Image 1 (cartoon, rainbow, N blue to C red):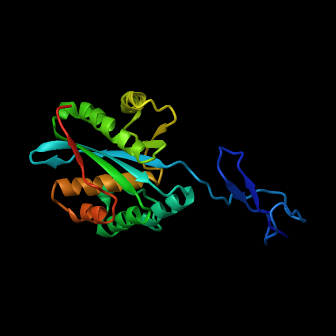
Image 2 (image 1 turned 180 degrees about the horizontal axis):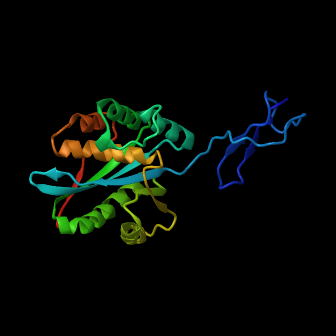
Image 3 (image 1 turned 60 degrees about the horizontal axis):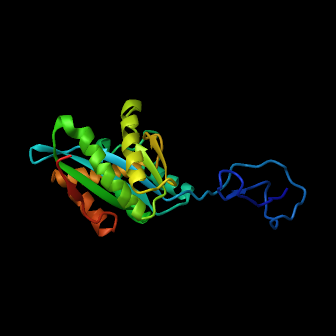
Length: 235
């Protein structure tokens, strides 16, 4: 039995390698083999900006924080394997607020090792009834920053169908102002492991702003992930 290694770029524009059989033969050198394509492949994806939010209480007022975390690593399998390494053998998705120190540390380490960088926009103070306006204002700042750094895809944490529609208006407005019609955008929940990185970046920022556990943020600054927040107000 043999392996036939074939590069196929016709599916969704991704370079994929398929394995057939049990040992190597040269590319395009057919021999007796099982003519079945097994799903063992590597894919190269767009540079993604993962967008999430957190609303901590800071100095007696809420801060509406939007973080756009860019994954410089574009190998989808590397990204997913790194995310899954955060939770180990368990099945439950990562959620910063529910995690202990060891799991949080693994998430921070993965962000640094992946070479991630993040833009943080903080609207403060934010009244309870002005959170949507604060979010839209923060997105109008964060999205251009992410695109300037090379992002071509926006993956946004879903808040439910109705609120995602409101997000869509803000995203389209930001892209239209930049005359960018080449950017793909979509909304996802935490069933997508890469969204855990966005959650971790937000969690680290929140615990820094509240003063509860500033060392997570400090590690990300030292590791080159955070460059410092951008503060806005009066949305």
